[in-house]
Length: 150
Image (cartoon, one colour):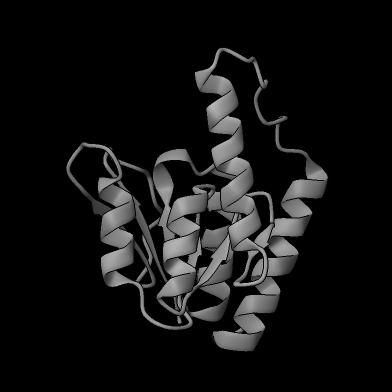
């Protein structure tokens, strides 16, 4: 198992949890972004910078992901592609995307996009809170225990 992070929009607090987990377990962690992201010096933590452009980081992650790899992303279409490739997808809020729930989440995302395109103010996601961080850490630990070296 490797962990891939869609790092362009990944909250710093989630990255910190990931850094600690990678160090603790020895699982390879790679952050992928189109702009530089600070990472600690570590043999298991890496950064891959990709060209700027729409979904360039997403396409690179999908190209590299292998079965049972974990991808941390808030991007529902990327999560769907990862699941299709046999990987696992976890949102920064700790929501585990699965074959069973990804279609409904894609449908809701598309519905909200349609509302926004028609001028409806749907608001944004609430700020991350302690419950979100705990849900992320718990699901990360479960996945690492099951598929990684944790």
